[in-house]
Image (tube, rainbow, N blue to C red; front, side):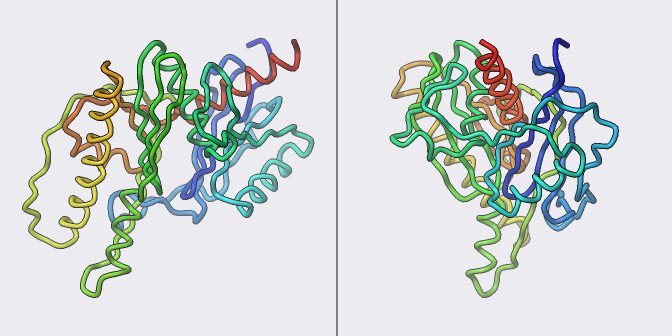
Length: 282
């Protein structure tokens, strides 16, 4: 390692993932903590999780690089945590730009693109060089990004996520239960290729399974349609890359090939940090 490590923080709407990496991106330590102190596995099955990270044994990072889409309260909480361990630690909250790390932003207003989507595309472009990509992230929202092999982001879509769809059914119907779920955390650098899996039976025999399977199937159909459309429009193969908290539920219904990668945002933050530091030195 040629320098002090970077602390990377990916603050989503439901949880915060972090990783301490060497300046070449090699992970040293990683973890997750939630906004509420609980993560939920499946439907209604609580799994204890860290509510606050324990960074006492970490080597002092050179700087912190943060993607935060969870709002000002979470930003203040992260600052408080960092101040408790390293009060003078330089920190950068990442924003989308017109171009960075080989990716060009196709949004009409580049800065309006979410920092998680931006960092995730940078991570995906580096992980799968020379390939056309459709990046699908299954979180509180389900997001799709179409990324050409040359790094051009041509646009994307946003829809309610799997858990949000289920919760909406319960909140706006008289006789359906309100279901909410968060997937467990997947370790840093979890990269897995997967083949199409059999679609589950559409004849659910209880209401909870009917809601969960129905919403997962809706998510999968949305992604499959866009993936086929992008391939047709570009007249070229497109790798479908999936990740996010609800990816496990949705990928069980996908009928197209996909690659699982759950740390694209952290990987992208590592590249942004290294690129920014190199630019300052140069």
